Length: 96
Image 1: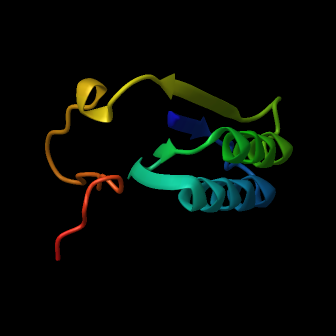
Image 2 (image 1 turned 90 degrees about the horizontal axis):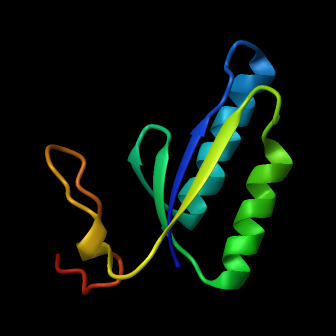
């Protein structure tokens, strides 16, 4: 399943800044960063449940925000990219 994950973590405290780094690290392990707090992920059902649990265990619901968008179908049908920072389609052959 394709996901778009966005988060907004309060960084007013040292603990918040640590949470921000940990959340980014978790997201990076499941997908690719497309903007500072936005990740595209392609996971199966088991990995999705694990990923969501890791994020929910980490965020502080009274201070932080987390959104997970479930995208249906082929990414070519719902993603348009402009400017720098193009994402890599890991499902296609990688040519070096």
